[in-house]
Length: 136
Image (cartoon, rainbow, N blue to C red):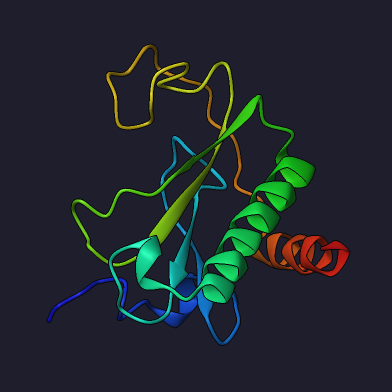
């Protein structure tokens, strides 16, 4: 099996624990875009034990909280598809009212050129995720 989420480059990893990783998505239109990736190659949330599902969602929420704290976006989109890469992962995407696709999905038709923003420092994201997880 040739799964890109099973072979993530170490440089792309922002945060990780024994069960999942958070990777940055290099998309200039969506700074701060992260993927929360389950380490084991499974396709669906229902493939996980209840405690693992809870842990994964806790990490997704902590990632959202970290990005909200660091970037103050208008909205944060959460999505899990797996249609293109059937490896369990969640997209966590800070959205701004003046971004390229807002209010459409980032995968929809562009609405405008969009305003470019700098991505947050990956170390700051990791620290904010740790803080959010500590707060529980």
